[in-house]
Structure formats: C-alpha cells, structure tokens
Image (cartoon, rainbow, N blue to C red; front, top):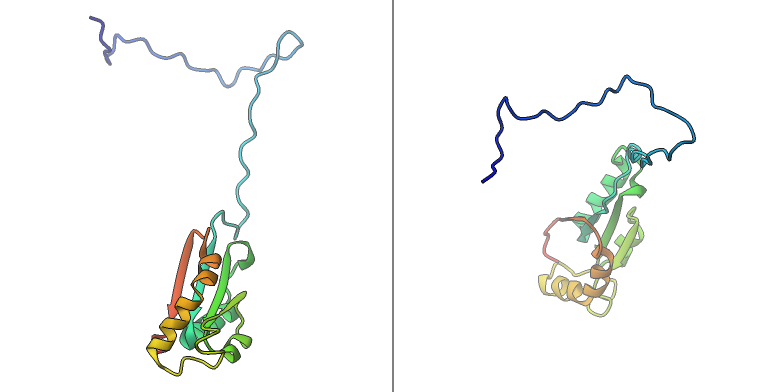
Length: 148
C-alpha cells in the first residue's frame, strides 16, 4: 500500500521565482486576480453596538457618554438609547433614540420608585425594546437600580 512519507527523500514543491519578469503579449489571457479588500477606515466597524440607558441613572450615564464621546465618529457603529417612564427626563436626553416605558401604567409621570410599576412599564414597551435591539451585535444596558 502506498503511504505518505515526510522525509528527505520526498519531492519538494517547486518554488516560484518572483524576481522574473511577467510575460506580456496577446498570446493568452492574463490570470485574473481579485483586488485585495480595502482596510476599514479608522472608527468604522462592521458591527452594530447599542448602549441602552434605563431609568434616571441609566439616562444620566447615557448623557455623560454622549457628552464625553467615544473618540471616533459614533454614528457609524454606536447608538445610544434612553428608556424611561418619565417623559420629562426623556425630553432632556442626549440619546440618539428614546423609548417611553409604560405609556398606560406610568403615563409619562415616572414609576415613583415602585418596582412593580417599573416592571409593568418595561413589559408594556417590550415590542419597542425588541424592535430597537433586534439585529444588533452587542447591547450594553446601564441602569441605576433605584427602585422604579
């Protein structure tokens, strides 16, 4: 039976002489080669990242992050989202997008530090939250955990 052996007797693969000139002419078609892919410009990313601030503490964090900036053009890969039951806090938000939680429960007046109201408000806005984060590669959630 034939077997593969890796020893000194094995034939070596021929090496290309890269210093030799490439023949030109009309006698045959030149080999086609695909251009090398261009490197991504600094700050551009093929992924989608969202930072979601929930409630007052999360909203304050988002505002601070927007003010300080990530150091690159964020619109190419990073989006800030603020979620709150308090419509007044959302109107002052620096986030790219906002979600009002609990349109029926809190009616824009905040959760009042009551965890049950905050939970019901988040469940009420589940479809809005899912629409924003679907298709996103990475999601960071920031919240103060103050009670509402």
